[in-house]
Image 1: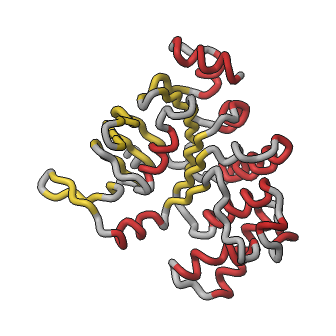
Image 2 (image 1 turned 180 degrees about the horizontal axis):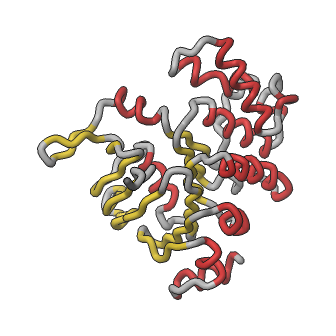
Length: 255
């Protein structure tokens, strides 16, 4: 029996007004896979990521996570939008890390990581605190638990943001250019944390400009441009020997 894909996109379209941003995306991400999305700005990568956890509604096609339609239920061949509360339940299983860290400034690192399990899952503070300590240790910040975001570097804040996403024990992690807002010397620490997650078998979709990370850690790589998948394959193959002229042109500028 083949495993159910963790993410399956079938002819996914997304428009903002008259502008079509996604023009029929088809792809599958297997459980435990590290799936990297690359491409120029405006190619639809971040929009696609936001559709996966229904931060954006798809305009057409179907998206499912772990065999469940995202944001909709199907009845007699028609799709009906889920209530906000039902979408929120689905979203609990999907961790997302953004370019900007979006930490609560008035809470310590520890409190930031504890917040969602306590508020959303109604966990006891003791249980949430213990997990938060463990996760901060895992991202190399055990000694910063009592620090506020303003007392942390960008790279440290992003690692707290990763710990916060992991605190909900998601089955899928989405990373939207998690290192693009960081100083170059802070990028490595964040990528190391992501590498560790990959080794632990976390299913990850990573929108990234870090080609070295994609090559070393990625299992699959998709190059998107103008809302379509131009080329897909093994990251090492695509990066060293791109078949499509558009991919070649893009990589010649970034590698």
